[in-house]
Image (tube, rainbow, N blue to C red):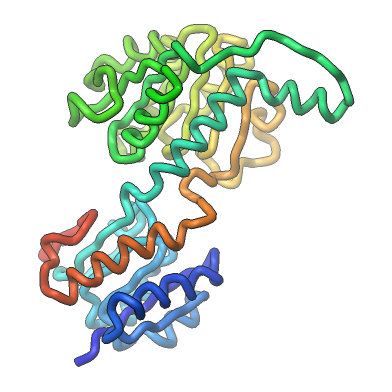
Length: 321
């Protein structure tokens, strides 16, 4: 019987052609059903056993409409939403963990450079046609503390070394990784933060990590430090951060994620000259579909060959409840 895969892409429907072409080139025996809306997916999915979609686009109704579902390839790193769904016991879940390294690392640099060189001030001057010069703060010789050591953190660490930075990691699970000068355990987070010119948050959101970066950790930062959150909004205590910024206790912040998204218009973060805001674009890139498709077709090839144990980024193995 011919295998069928449903590819669902709601946010960037033009990317569907990239996924379909990649599958047809590498796995020509697979029937591809493409959908750009939830309703369109429901109309096509009853006979499919494989779904490729961004995790948050997979609904309980979609799962319920596929009695033969065997595998979900999340086209995202995060798969938290899928853990809330009643999946079949033998359904595999894989992610695209690791593919976001380049874009996430570059976003971290955008926020670091904006803070170091006070780019918001430059932009305000440009709008006012004001010529103002000041000494430019370099990244070279600065210390970055990366909270959470995974594939994205490694991509960032290697790039930081190219800029001549000292790189410290904080992790409960790892003691060494490429690009890091040293890795501290989580119970030394405050002492690591005290060394930071830049504290970059890349830890996943879990109950254990809720407000991990709280008032005490923010209070441990040096006055000239910048906090950058490109992980999940709830990992940082936003009220404690706002207080530190308003009181001038830290240099600034670069934020891509927030406790409430979109960030409410009344948030004081919008109006702070100490903050650069990006609208949760950390994982996005102009080659996102190509990046995700490479992992998708690799895993699809392994799935069809029965080598499911060798698939990349297995989040949920058969038999999980």
